[in-house]
Length: 81
Image 1 (cartoon, helix red, strand yellow):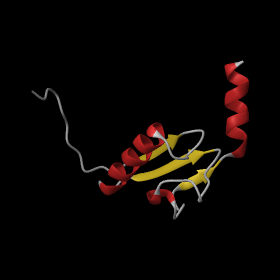
Image 2 (spheres, one colour):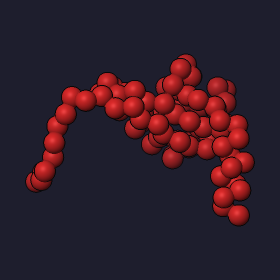
Image 3 (cartoon, helix red, strand yellow):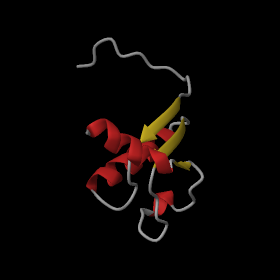
Image 4 (cartoon, one colour):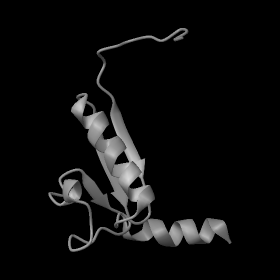
């Protein structure tokens, strides 16, 4: 039962932030979400402080939508303390 669901053809600019884009369950969910959103025509970028091309999911190997933020992890550690 869908209430008040509005469909739109508007393409969105989406930023997904994840500290370490390695191989794991959370990373799999992040990558799957990004792939699905992009397949619907949205402009998706993944922001991460770590992306090792030797230990990552195949969908992220090209790296064209992945932006490295080396200081992000330090910032997150600072606000957690």
